[in-house]
Image (tube, rainbow, N blue to C red; front, side):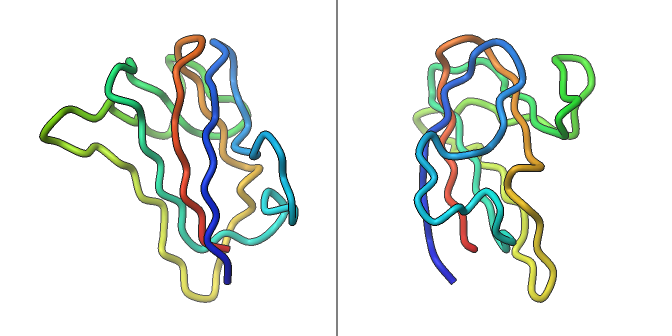
Length: 103
């Protein structure tokens, strides 16, 4: 098991949950836990499959506030896992989300 963290920058189009640099290839490893957090200044960011759009998505990540942390948690999974590269996001250009992953 390994703990990793990285930031993704939204482009206005679907963005794959693959670290900008992927030392160790975590995108292709089975992930047992993913924590997704949005910056306080962000609008809503949607997540889902590679077909994610602003109107067709699996869920949303709300922006954090000074008093509320709106992180989305996927997992933990015991013996099952999923490939991080199967997770996609769509949000406003230049906004950032932060991911914490346990493989």
